[in-house]
Length: 337
Length: 244
Image (cartoon, rainbow over the protein chains, first blue to last red):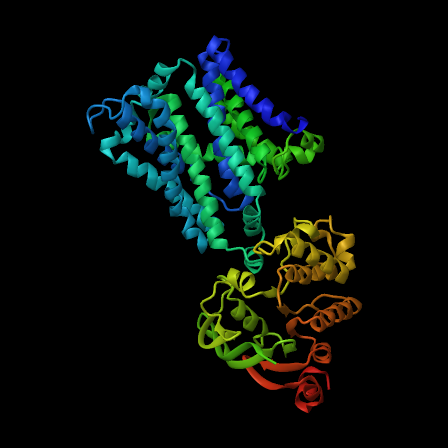
């Protein structure tokens, strides 16, 4: 029983949050902060797989998030909202609950395929050169969408609320909050399973020494392909959720600024630590909200904090350790690897 | 005895420079064969070509063939050389994973093994018996080991990959003489248990006293070959490599 404490408390927590939101104890604003927190956790943990565990320097994570956001949005808009492409919605609103996870999956899959743009060059390049490729990938995605008039181009794309309304029409509970919480749980669980599996051990091996990994019979090309596609696929999931939280997407909310934000979260938390990435995503989201009264000045204060952090604790909050490495007693409360 | 590895007229280039000008040699099952030669003779290049390591290290084979049990290695990707053909390489400079513990390093070598926990456990015991120092330090981060211990770990790691043929690139480099003899004695034990060994060494004297046969490489060509006794007695080899 004790072994399941962690899992049980997670689900109880999700349930409690939903109930509190439903009863109106948590207002709309707090709900949206919690949802952004979830999205940020998904983003930072997924980038951590590439930048932390694999030791590459990918700075185009926003691009993959963008692919996921747009593909998911296009699917739900086609299905549930009146649009200028197909006219009438394809499905009745009562189907929203079943179609939404499929749309999220489609977005994640599309983002994973977009990840190939980075994964294939990574076979032969690494370090600074690969970083430039990831930067280019980000720009390619943003520019492509900017020029696609059919999905709004630079004006952005909207109509996703129809799907959310559809779900709320079935049972009136805060669906998006639930989806984000479960999406976060799923992503972190998936990444955790991957990096602690025997197959996943090839990822830190590549970070350390590619030649040595190859001698140890790690198929480095395949490993890179899996890691990049998994990372960008999960970023796509975050994008899909993000688009449906706001109900509106604009290509420029996924540009290099977004990628930088995610990178800041990864380096703040500590490279190669999932609990670090989670903690820093929570911290970063809270920090953004707390410093809101400073308005534009917060973009002076936050980088300053980052400089101080790098000065005095360059390895980030957690270094490459997990929470359970620092507090071994925690291991009593969960049984997963 | 069956021929295990056969290198035929191998020519290898790095960019525009030809590093090996058509060398041929073979290794038979159960043998210890050594390639000796001075710096820059092409010893490491030969090993890298056999393992087909990825760029930028990859030397390009322009002519000739490398056969392992009669099968050409030229189209086999490096990770399969370990997992399917049971060859292992102890690379120059050891290349152990510094931020992992000794045990994790050994465990990583079982990455592609599918023969079950029991066999892997037996191999752990074997490595810890051969190198008792590693057993003492199994929980220690491997970058904190001494040079000799790191070399033991590199050899131990190769053994963990269920190999029947092991290639070593200068295992004596940077080791104290006592540790060096220890290492060679352990390799001899492995050989008596049936392991085939291809050894690359600068320390020609030591290598020849330990191997069955040897080849002398000089600037990309094989200049002498024979049993260890023959090479040790050869006046040319004596003069060039054994210090008179």
